[in-house]
Image (cartoon, rainbow, N blue to C red; front, side, top):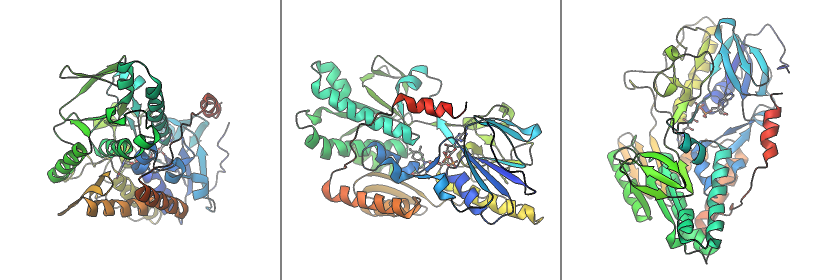
Length: 434
Ligand SMILES: Cc1cc2nc3c(=O)[nH]c(=O)nc-3n(C[C@H](O)[C@H](O)[C@H](O)COP(=O)(O)OP(=O)(O)OC[C@H]3O[C@@H](n4cnc5c(N)ncnc54)[C@H](O)[C@@H]3O)c2cc1C
């Protein structure tokens, strides 16, 4: 198998990953004199901030994803290849992928992160992460299947375990997801499963530190905790999960919770590649880069977004792993490639923090916009606008808006399908590399 990409007199930039950073970079290099190759292990760009709504049956997966080939349909000197990159051979300027080798003049690593299970085998094997669309759909299946099982279970303990949902990680994703599941419990499950007794459903939100939304203001985290509590979510801060076996979550304080649904949204670690060694990585496995996003020791290899660790005075431990950082770095790197072409010096990166948002439920959100701190419906409206604006594609924006309005008016999400992905699709994925 080969990449089938022509060799021209243009310099080739290979971008690994079409997430927020990689996509911004590819888009902003539209009018450059480079040949661009975008490689991603999926054939679509996804919008993770709304993944929890796919999981909680509010949106369909295609509403928060966009195929790369459609995005770049009319683009010249642009090539998308569906492949997984495994190694970077920097000394010879090529990468190893599931479909073969590809050489580059410049390489940009924009491959993001994966879920961090902190080395716990059982948690890795049996918990449900929610980082990708596939995982979001698997989690939706699990929640809905367990409700179906609970309704027919004759064993009281088993039934309770099926009705207990444990979310681990009190960051924005954990808060948003537990809020959404609690709204399902209140508005949907009593109607869909009148004979279940949904009051017996318990939602636990476990957080290892002393507060929820650790990267937001004190006010925001207090409001989130109070609101979730009122919505019936049981919050346990300062609770570290040590194991998950035989349907039991083990906590460091000796307590256990029975559950068939352990949702793990508690941390991430940078994606790794062979030949990127320890000396090039820092906290969370992130690749250390300088102010131009260049990797230590290599003038033609860059890393942007969640995968990289760039420190500046205000961010001595690196930037937060959020979409805005990836987008701003992708944008600046595109500018710097163009500056390089015209022999101008490169501009250093400085993060412009636009604020942080998290939604908790209908009419309930928090927004830290520097000095302005919003909560409740005003924050919720800001959250809706910002997210609607950020989703790719007019059709997706329209469908998301229609679904939101529909769900708001009817209190009813309509995507409650249990759709198992047949095993063959995994084989098909593997076939790509043969
Ligand atoms: C559930 C969830 C909710 C979030 N909510 C918010 C939010 O509300 N606001 C916010 O600012 N941020 C949010 N984030 C974080 C945000 O999504 C990330 O900061 C952002 O996606 C980082 O962009 P990136 O380009 O660095 O990486 P990503 O967007 O993760 O993209 C990485 C890309 O690389 C591809 N890839 C990975 N490895 C390989 C490989 N070996 N070979 C080929 N391709 C590869 C992946 O398929 C993916 O397309 C959320 C994240 C999650 C998981």
